[in-house]
Length: 140
Image (cartoon, rainbow, N blue to C red; front, top):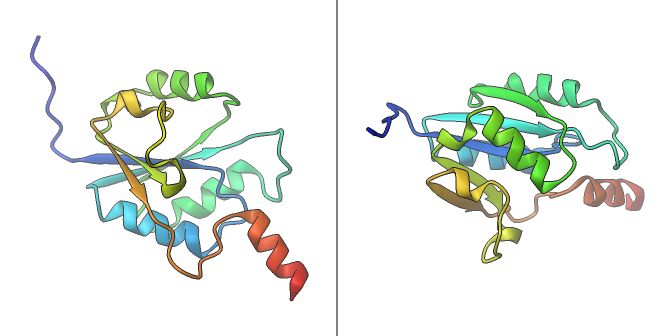
């Protein structure tokens, strides 16, 4: 069977993007520079408190000129995540982007469905999570 060749290198980044902040934008901008098309999966995880709906977060991310497509993903476990990747043919994507915290770990969700996993380092001084952002607001 002949393997399908893509014209463009497609990458994707998954995350909650809860209270979208500078580190999210910097990360996505860096990811977009490493692929021809960037797809963002917004994780809608009900077990954690949400300040914005997943649809609102997806709408904001979709306005970024360097993001090619945004989808909302509502799985709750790694198995749901893998199932979502397979159902949406993301196994044909070339690059998956993860935060540097997962580098060196085994069994990275979705890694078996792409040609390459790239780890994106957070920029110095950037707030990296909603928890950090909320703490910073409380302390100011």
